[in-house]
Image (cartoon, rainbow, N blue to C red; front, side, top):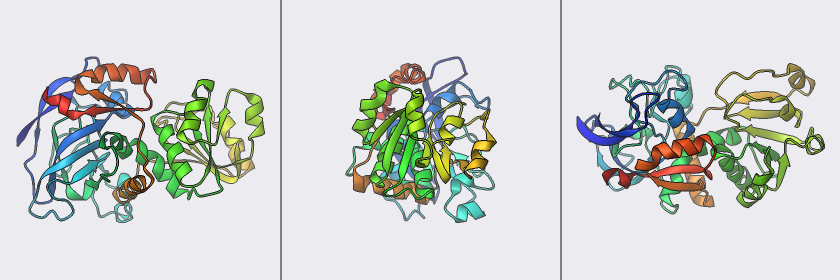
Length: 349
């Protein structure tokens, strides 16, 4: 085992602090990665503070990882020492079930292994994430990163990016479609960039007039203020697809009324019960209310190559690891445009 510096939460009510973890020695299929940058996801905060009630402490969050390969196992053929690579939300799946055979490891029928706070069925123990110096990952779950992009801004693509890319690709967003992005945070701002690059007419739906110019600057064609009843009425029955990134339970009915016949609203933000969904709105125009979870490895790689081709990255604020607890507090207040990323060389200070 190798000892590695990290930052960890030791309880739901205490701040993250320096901590030493152990990584397994490199196995034949493994890649050892020196972590250069790690994005800060809202899931990191939920895990650190046990908002979902299943955190195993000490917990080392982080699943938006960009780094450099420093060692490979004897059987590794996909990556070599010196490569710039990424690791997202998954580090293991069965790789043989129907979902995995379709490249949908996130829906592994035997349960995939998350990059952190997840039981590792093959190697035992609990996984530790990217708030650390190094990580060891099997080659099939390591991604190639386009080096023509600023690496620090690539990191959030590994979660925020793929979470929005996957449904947009699955529902075949293309030129001429009217696509609404509901919410303008870490997920929403990536949805705007992807939908625009796919050729759609992009409308940002937000409660805040103050976000109008930011939305337009990101590439939106229009901004719809959802608190304005006249604006909402003017857009009824006009959308081909809605990507809903709101992270908490909310009234989805006004949004459903915006969809055309047979069209879809996809939930990617709220991982909790939705209350007061009016089935009549689904029945009346044969609308679809669906959900989507990140993406598989093949799909994530395709997204990264698309980003390299179209010069798409996240809008970020780079921080030192010593400021992670302040970043969490600011994230709760939505005081970031639009994603924090940790410069991991600060871990050695």
